[in-house]
Amino acid sequence: MPRLRVQSLTKAYPSVLANDQVNLSVGAGEIHAVLGENGAGKSTLMKMIYGVTAPTSGTIYWEDQPVDITSPAQARALGIGMVFQHFSLFETLTVAENTALFLPPGQSLDALSIKIREVSEHYGLPIDPNRHVFDLSVGERQRVEIIRCLIQKPKLLIMDEPTSVLTPAAVDRLFETLRQIRAEGCAIVYISHKLDEILALCDRVTVLRDGRVTGECVTEDQTPASLARMMIGHDFEHPFKPEPTAGEVALSVNNLSLKAVDAHGVSLSELSFSLKVGEIVGIAGISGNGQRELCSLLAGEVMPDAGDIHWFGQSLVGEGSTRRRQRGLCYVPEDRLGTGALADMSLTENSILTAADRAGLVSAGFLKLEKARAFADRCIKSFQVKTVGARAAARSLSGGNLQKFIMARELEQSPTVLICAQPTWGVDVGAAAQIRQSLIDLARSGCAVLVISEELDELFDVSDRIGVMFNGKLSPIEPISRTNREQIGLWMSGLWQKAA
Image 1 (spheres, rainbow, N blue to C red):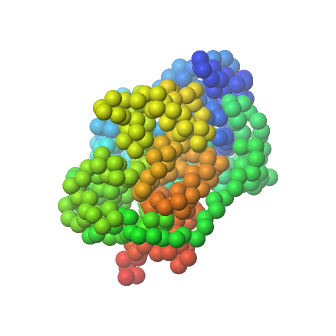
Image 2: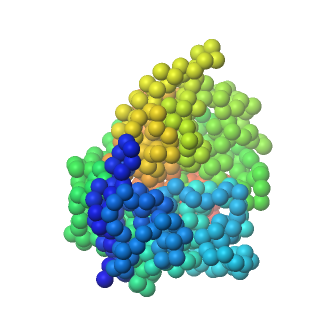
Image 3: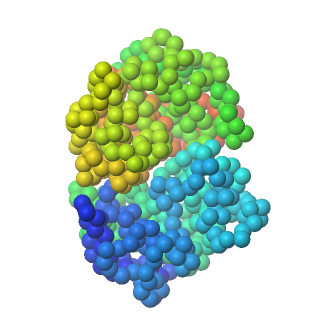
């Protein structure tokens, strides 16, 4: 008997048919992948199952009985847990308080904190229950989402891009956990764009395209290439990276230090590196080791306690983010919804937020709305962003499509230096290849690019030189030809310091 079955499930919005007559069946003790491009309808389908949104038509069966799931609380009462792609955490509350909101009332926070520590350490996803969410990196927030689902011991676990900001070691540990709870009879619906993960973990695959089921298969019969063809309808090309012709130093960081602003922050200690015109430098590392603080310093959001940043030989210390953007420094933050874009603003308005000067969207203090809409339209077209248009609110886009729009918005400004954190987070395999090729092409056209990512494959695809951040310190920056994934993986635990 299937643990979950949906029959002819349809969700229609005024401007789009998100799901069209979808059928899906997941058995107890099965890990079932749902695969599709950004905007294919995966997240909408899961939100209907979890009670976040109501279906237009169709039926959901839970343990062979039709159910009308009207809220996440009702879903959790049935035994359904969900890890969202966009985090559903209250930033001003602690990890324990956020977890308590997911559980029946009357929980003791002290007892719950102990349980969170036990579960997080058992599953290899350590997190301090007393930390506030606003202090957590993206990777740490992902851990909170996963832990607070696992603490409920669900009968069905829905995971929407759960490994997007986890390191390879953390992914391996998570897979061990998922296999363990599968063996205990839990059904798992797993959404990911990482085809190798699906083949390694999942039993069956259902493919969505434009809101409809276009294929089903068992994973043992498939390869990454065959899954990609099922998903996007054709083969995708791996990025082509010509040899770099590095020019002058565009950005140099000299003995940069920053004291943590609170007990849970990361202090940066004497960071030094250079970024040259025409090259891509990649920074690897487990989330929460100072990457966010480094980005804030480079973007001009905070000033260092010691050290200096130079722009073509001229000091930037004292210059804020507006002046640095005017110089040609563009920035893709790791947090796309909240920092990278404002949810309730339209795509046109979100374009104005960062491209007003570089794209000429403001003149004499007045907005050029038509020019701003045209700019947003170019961004939508350049990365095939699935949306109803430039007037659409950022929150209406799927996570991957919003990521594509933010990437396009920064690239369309013809940056001199681009700082890019987690560039392909939540993006499907075809779009990820396009983004990576765009970064390579941008560098080879004369831009200096810094890519910060937890995806080692991504960094080795695009980088010319690569280093690692650990506990606020930076490893030596090595040419790609003189290192490998194994060495960088070891360095992500700080082992370069012991070797030195």
